[in-house]
Image 1 (cartoon, rainbow, N blue to C red):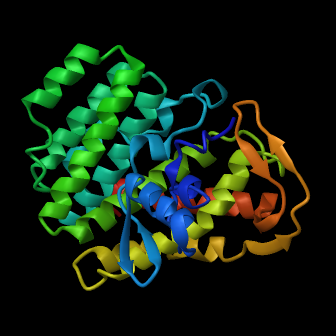
Image 2: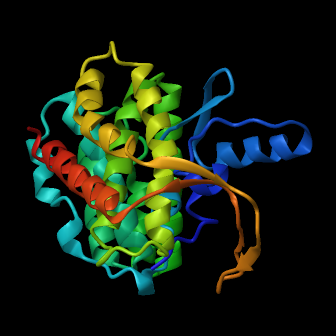
Length: 298
């Protein structure tokens, strides 16, 4: 299995999405990087530090569907939505359901994607997002429910509208909570889709590279820790922070460039975050534990 790094925006835009690392540079190169970050859901908070906001569907699940087997067992059941009565659980699990909808959409699971879109609509009124989930959106989904590309486009457009709506209301803390839920659900699904460890698996290396993204996400949450629920989320994520801190960064000389089957150029050398099988298993375990606590609201 592999990520489509072009679409995965996060570590793909800064290394790419989930991308949230500190950016530096000057001239036209830095200008292009900033433009790419804006398109991938980044926001300049302070100094040159870039913080991850709300994950777009393509940014989250841009791996190749034929190499990553879809499993509905990895989704948070839509029936759980009624259990989220406090603002913290509603916001975090809205992010979880955004990731679940994206996972279904990019894998062509039309009915499941529509189901999760409906679940998001049900939660939207509690987050001040009623305007996003209107009749126009419902009609668009009905018309294109069996068109994978259209469904992906709808999912991305909805993401953009959610982000704009929250920003216009000054709800950056809500964006932070949604981002935490979305990112964690994404990583939970990915780690649980990998059948066995291999130190040459690009997806596993990508999970290691998410260390930078995770650190930035924690910093972004930290900006709003005085807001009810944020500090609780930070504390819930601490065990994952401890697991990521066990990964080491090594520097290697550039030795070669290779081209993957989809035409992406991989430059050998530079900075690399090393991950062992023990590291991977610990990250996978912590992600599953935290994710369970979030979706069960415990």
